[in-house]
Amino acid sequence: MNKNKKFLLLTVLAVFSLVLAACGFGGDSSEKSKDDNKESGSQASSSKELNVVVTSEPPSLHPALATDTTSGAILQNVFEGLMVLDQDGKPSAGMAEKWEVSDDQLTYTFKLRDAKWTNGDPVVAGDFEYAWKWALNAENLSEYASLLYPIKGAEAYHTGKGSADDVAIKAEDDKTLVVTLEQPTAYFLELVAFKTYAPLNQKVVEANKEWYTDAGENFVTNGPFTLDTWKHSDSIVLKKNPEYWDAANVALGTVNIGMVENEATAATMFKKGEIDYLGSPYQTVSLDEIDGFKADGSLKIDDYAGVYWYKFNTTDKITGNANIRKALTLAINRQGLIDNVTKGEQKPALGMVPIAISGFEKDRGYFKDNDIEGAKAALEAGMKELGIKDPKDIKLNLSYNTSEGHASIAQYIQEGWSKNLGITVGLDNSEWQVYLEKLNQLDYQIGRMGWIGDYNDAYTFLEMFDTAANGNNDTGWENPEYKKLLKESIVEADPAKRLDLLKQAEGIAVSELPVAPIYYYTNLSVANKKVKNMSPDILGNIKLKYVDVE
Image 1: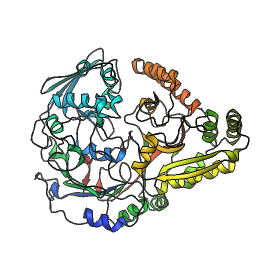
Image 2: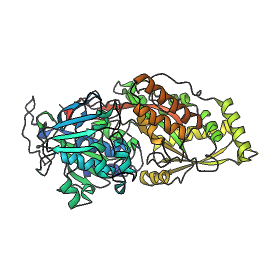
Image 3: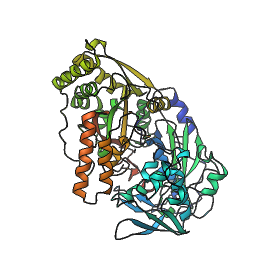
Image 4: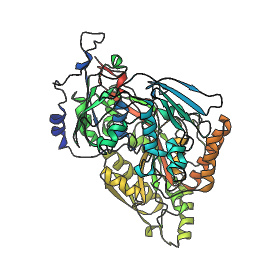
């Protein structure tokens, strides 16, 4: 998801002992769930614990403000929308017990089940109307507000051209929510399962604007787990929610989530049995450990709808030149990077949309991997346009958030650019929050980022570049024809014609290269043998509701 701005892996071995002590990994929890439901064995579900780590403090635990994988990993388990994605990644019933779609595919009527917030309030249709309009209110700065644009009047309200009253979201009564779309949207039910579509308790939000910044009575949720404790920059503990409508089918009683910024530290913890899982959407498998986990047969490799790319600041004098961007893109040896550095059986990315996405399974043939001759020709053209005589006069900075994985990738690509193009590239790393701010402010030249699909459709990878103002763009690039094609794809009802429009848009982006695609993700994971049903779906999500521990 993305901004599903993703996969930050930081340092500091010194946190190792602190995390163990703070999270109580391996110990018995003194806190028990109120639910006394018995599982198939003799152990009460409230005593079942899962230990995992994430890479950093979650930037935001507000469902309408969160843009990253770390926050999403928690939010998807403490909030529940009208729809949820099941274990196969397909939309299924959540807070909505049933739903109807009109013959013209424009009106969705959701009927809510009996459910409660953690403060005892009933979950009502008005909670969804309030939450969705809250996200669309531009004053609230929800970067994912555009995901609500399929709803009639949503874009106009968000962009100041309409009012909240014009948005076609209506709670007809406590159990009925009626939503009318601008045009048929094939993936709307998948969108409704995304975190931005989660409900908010209006009474709680309006009583305390900082309700989402800490655990406690103000953090009111409706999902299978509650946010029990939150020690900032240290650990989070989730507890089974006894008020959840499907609590009888939630096996885990406690989920301990430590914050370990170093992959090697996390790998050591896993091998010692102190944590139970490594992989998306939690801490990743260390590059140095992949071969070992492969050898012992514990490494699991799943298809993953994600792409790793380098973004370009197109407002910069050097990276603002399309030929320079082309030269840098063509001169990356993707297969060599995968074979020698990432080692996760990823696929070279030769387009913007991952091959895991429906309709984009095959290479579209935009460019070749490791095309050094093409790169040199593009470099020469770019230098001529910029009035640069010698490649040595080109000095660029490649930025990334602090991580051994991102550093290894950057060093490999830096060496290739230096060797094959003769340019000078410096490396610049920053802590995650600082790094995000650099990208948002266009205070960089080249910057790494990953993007995981928010739903199984190419639009989720292309939409972020529709305008330079899009909160997920961070490149300064926009193209009117690209935007036109995306808009046409939204209203196109014929699946084949719509797919063609999306591929045309992708072709424009790849011709101008606001980003250099590097590889399509696979999801590498290892899990303790006692952990069951803990596999990420194609979008990298894990619903802890389905996880069990023997």
